[in-house]
Image 1: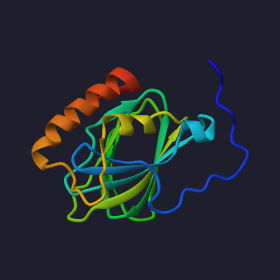
Image 2: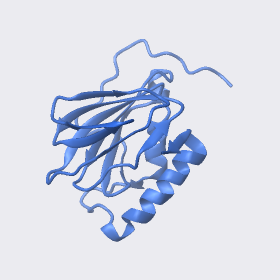
Image 3: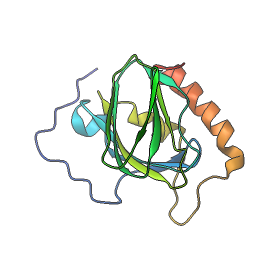
Image 4: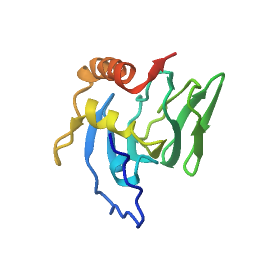
Length: 163
């Protein structure tokens, strides 16, 4: 197996560009850059998290994760504490530590998600449903099954443990 080539020039992803999928509870995830473009160094997704959504408490074994909250607010759980992240918040989540977040507020949240090293961004593309412009998110009746299936894939293929 060959090692990915390290990028030696700027990568520009214009606004609105990148593959987008619906996942979990009506979340929208858009790939901004991944393993192929960065030589495996970092993966970046833009995420829009609607009210009521967020992953269950979990642990990444393979990558560190970071969030930069652009809009809205999220309730974040880190091991044994909870806090509210507001626009402009940066959250670093080291691998091997339990964490989760949920949008418990009335407005959608938008954030950048960074994965170091890259690779976990592929999870969202795998479990998500391709976003078709003009079509709404999947119906809430499908959310529980989507979350259950997604967490099963995360455990089996991406080194995620449910806490």
